[in-house]
Length: 347
Image (tube, rainbow, N blue to C red):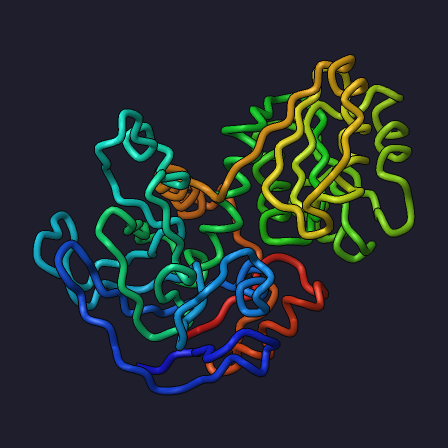
């Protein structure tokens, strides 16, 4: 099969488009013929060996997101057949375990105690085919295109967890969405708007804020020009926002906590701008703030957002589509941050 392979970590030049042996489906596994691949900033971290995941067995195939059809089914797999349109779950779980508390059985397969990750612990989606175990297959609704499916899992499902499951956003609340130009951010703007909230988007350029308004944001803050706290207070009459959807970390996380109203909630999933943050705990408990987080999303949430995408209630935002062989150029665009939404590759 054709695949984008790394033989060592490093820059985009380490992404080599080449022929490599096609995997075969073993017991309890399926082989997916991928049609589209979603690109994520996490891929850049793994490629550059800055993700915290060490000792990748080389050669290796990156990629946590994609969509296609089942090409082969191994012994013991039930409920699926060759030709079914599916996508692999990026946080691969065992499905069930013998532990006293099984997170998968509780619907939290994204934090399985026997956790693995597509594109890390085993070959990922930068290829014509990817092999996954049966519990980690997500069926694609007929109304959802392969392109939209590949743009949905990380962005839409994670944003749903941040906004709805963890953030508990409700109608009439004020919600600040940071990094509104990112895949997760652009999805969070839509989901918070769908929930009936007034959305304030923050981004690093006025152009990205204009596009966020098209997705439902009522107001925008360019954090390269203005203080998030000052602007939020102006827009809310000095009260602050009820919820912050945060995926940046560092100083922006600290500003976001200060921008919260009394009893405010902050929901986070990322920290590329700073993983270690000092917090004023006096302000935190005096304002009765809550901070929560999510590690991607379980299969059930992916199924829910795919249904909403199929119904036209949510719309994945795609900035650019590359052919698989131009993966290096796609990585360069992603690293530049000069885009809005998702970067997708066609296999």
